[in-house]
Image 1 (tube, each protein chain N blue to C red):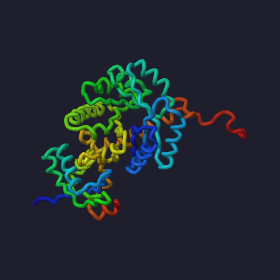
Image 2: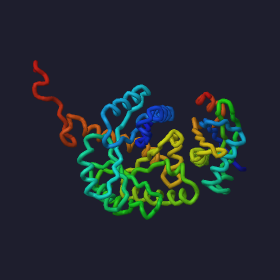
Image 3: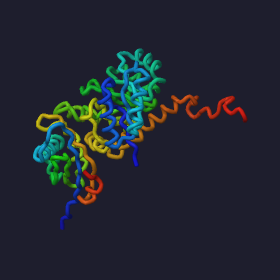
Image 4: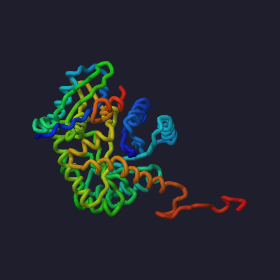
Length: 246
Length: 106
């Protein structure tokens, strides 16, 4: 059975009832793991509180931060500050320079292009080539597709179709997330996969974008954040004086 | 000789603060399909709302097996009925009503 992941829930952290409702609904709809966007300066107590809620509902919580830098320099600064604090880092690419920097930096997990204006979506061939060499994945939020109407939705579908085709060509992994800010924008994983078919993503690829791809990102990052990690493939298996009788 | 159409049954739950009638739900699903796929696409779905419990807000849609994804996408894109926010969740899909009801008890 597939383990589905929604890496992008955006509830208001101050409203714990809303957070609880969204987590409950995600669990009911068949998600095993959810990522909640947290403010960069979030207090550890709030993270603990969220973790307790998720433990009670029996769903795995992933801490995530959305960086929205104005310049590549600001992005590098933010990455060095927050990489070890959050399990998933997403960069909202609002300019071409930021998009290029984010695509080539291995500390970035997800590339997000929120604009519905095709001129402001910077996922082109050059971006995909950089992203394929690093480890970043293209994130597609479904909330705008559900909430937008008529021409705006048509334009977004057309942009997404182009981006998915480029991602396929350059082997850039695609992640599908909800991007939901309230319970009305959350749908089940198979519903999202059916919507993804609208922008020519084949069903198996869409299901992979909702399960294996995000799971791989989280697994990789949790491994890196573990105190026993040294470098890829190198782990500490025993420390000096850990076994006094040996 | 033409082959008999293979059907699929989709169970769904309506989440909204107001009560919605069977007619409202059927109109919303048809409108969503028309918006996303046009009249040509809608004609291929062989869609019918065959059951809806207004109290439990639970219903069953029948469609052709080739258009399950289309219907699912259309149902997922519904955000309002009578200008009030509504979400429709597909609970399960099956080839027979009996199996669907066994799979998704309301």
